[in-house]
Image: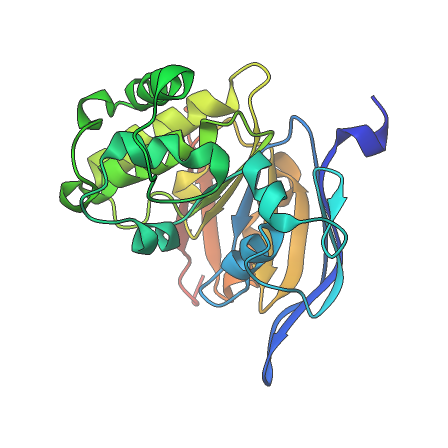
Amino acid sequence: MSARAREILDVRGLRIRRGDTQILRGLDWRVARGEHWVILGANGCGKTSLLSALTGYLSPTAGAVTVLGSTYGRTDWRELRKHVGFVSNALTRGIEPDEPALHVVASGPDAMLNLWHPPRGARRTRALTLLRAWGAGALAERPWGVLSQGERQRALIARALLGRPPLLLLDEPAAGLDPVAREHLLALVQLETQRHRGPSLVLITHHVEEIMPGFTHVLMLRRGEVVAAGPIATTLTPRNLAATFAAPIRLRRGRDGRWTLSLRSFAE
């Protein structure tokens, strides 16, 4: 497969400025098919703004963004969103409290919320299948307003996967979850990284503990600039983490392939 055919994302010189604030400062980043990326950085480093630019919800000030071979400004991004799975807590604000979880999932392929008509046929069947696969089959008819944060996240991921997208963007999916719910969700994310012909995943997180062994690459941001990017084995290092979070850091990896971060004392 040629390099161009393997590219999922190609971001070149991306700048985002709002008023006097520089959010992203000339970011370059590429993702190939089969790669699963984690984006790490402190609050305000530009992580969520980057995903918003990739999905067309935030217009770049400068630079080029190409997603699945389509370049921003030359393609109808409303149509492109139908081929990119996107999971974000921001989506929940647009969902009506009485909307059944099954309807939320079924709305995924149209990149819309709050269906006008109940899902039928193959779409309903697949929506139910995905809810069950993500441990939420019993929630199908339950109203959105009574779901827990963990249940909502599972439904949103099922929604994002319904259209079989080649790219799945996860914006802090474990935020606000208790430890047990977080581990259950991360175990399902790990299974998704192992799925044959599944989507390339991009996970935004603050926590190295949420990086499952199936993730292959990491992009580390600080103040809108790239600190480091590349394979996790060589890029996720205490030195790069210290530069990313501006703190002395100790990093350990367990036998299960999971990471643990702690702060070194300044006296060490």
